Image 1 (cartoon, rainbow, N blue to C red):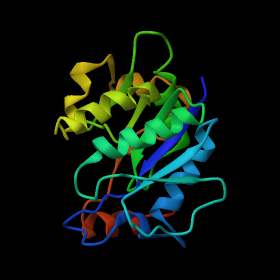
Image 2: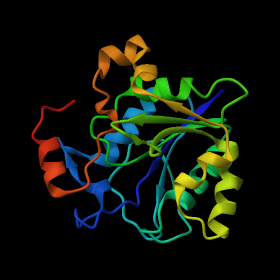
Image 3: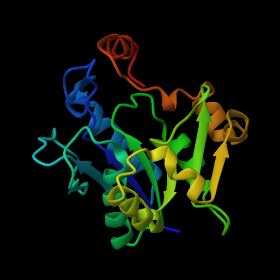
Image 4: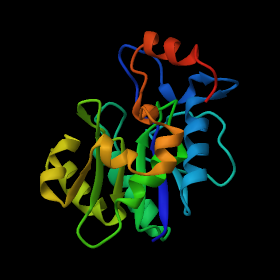
Length: 210
């Protein structure tokens, strides 16, 4: 199955005070790094879902930008529906969907999550790492776009409400790290580490470039 990469770029942390997509990252930006990682890991299109009127930093050629019909701050349900619908129209059956603020995301993690979507019994591959579900570092069938759109129309903006409605496969750390490529490349599963505050960003930025 052809897979897409989708980045939801409209996120803004109230503690960060600035859009995360444009944060500097070793001479580039967090958004550019994220889309470059996805481009290495998927065999289909890479899409960025932006909030209406959102300015984006420079992106690599070939990356498609689609606009979320809802303003930033309303959560990821609508943005995910928009991205999955666009990816499906471009011929992708599955998609790895993530936030822009995953500075240690590794292609091996993306590939491992997408591999868990194979078969006829799963709609979402949902990692459970660090004691939390990771819905913005997860794999989705693009055919879920109408389900997410219906949730939005009904006023259900909690992404967590999707998982009881569909066939969700939770991926534990042990399950993820059973993949030798991922175990070698990211043994502590830092791929899911995000930056929600200036301190988080400073700590991540102080480390050597991945």
